[in-house]
Length: 151
Image 1 (cartoon, rainbow, N blue to C red):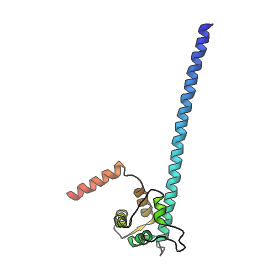
Image 2 (tube, rainbow, N blue to C red):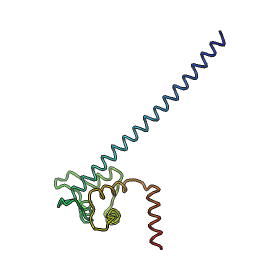
Image 3 (cartoon, rainbow, N blue to C red):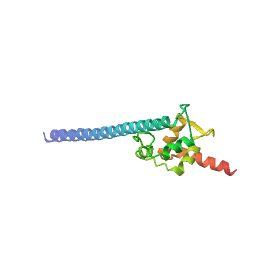
Image 4 (cartoon, helix red, strand yellow):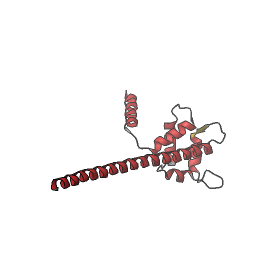
């Protein structure tokens, strides 16, 4: 009877450990899913902000903005005449600090066709890159471009 009792205890211990391990793995999986959902929500909110900014700058509604449009909005205290929306404060809320002196360099980087204007997709794509950290692919591309300029 003692060996049967020992065997029951051993099986119970193994099952308990398995349940704790499975619960821990499920908790980690749930945390990962939550992080992905928060990332998506945050990205959607930031993209929406950038889209709003673009539309506020596109005064003539031709679907294009210029560097001057970007300067005008970022240099002003507010983008709305009723002073209800501050683009620099809104951007800072997402961790993007874009000073007046950086606007020219930033616009040059997103104006990949060199036309002096960018469309909504180019603007939002550039704003997303501006917010994120540089990854290996972007650093490699930068290194390649610098190398090609040397040659």
